[in-house]
Image (cartoon, rainbow, N blue to C red):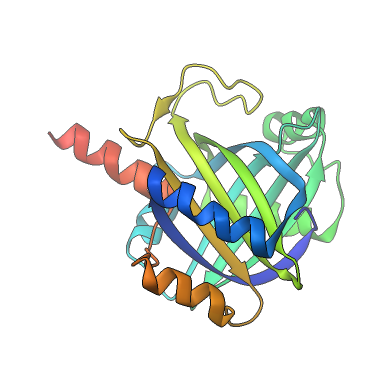
Length: 227
């Protein structure tokens, strides 16, 4: 989904390869492939020198905020966005930029895109004193329910990252987060989940987990440095 504004409830599940293969039977029966079914998503997350946004996110507050640049692998199309979460509901606002517009903004602090969302993002970047901090990428498969387009599921694999060379178009020299094959399933809906889906999860003992990709990477790296 590539709109400029939306809100939804999200739940994440960490699946083994076996669990992922098994749930594909359910996907084929109840879901369609999204128009953007297969994508390689790259992100640049912003933070300040103290990593205040990341640390705040790990403390699981009622309200938290992330600022990031996202690419879906399309040539010269980027999305600069604010992602906020309040009591389990995710709110996202973003603006579309070309690579030249983004680079010009970083270097010259000049807003070529005068949309309200861009002015809001610029305000928060200056307020929190954040800058590009970490590159995070993964491969995504996206689906939506046959009888409800607001009920969506994505599967992210090959989670990888780096702290240097923060060029979003460069997908080289990254570190993998998981040692084994794992899939991050994200379930996204505006309403409660259907009974047939929750029943499947319950029978197969698949439970939601609190998992932030960028927060988990930061925590792992911090623990490695301590060791």
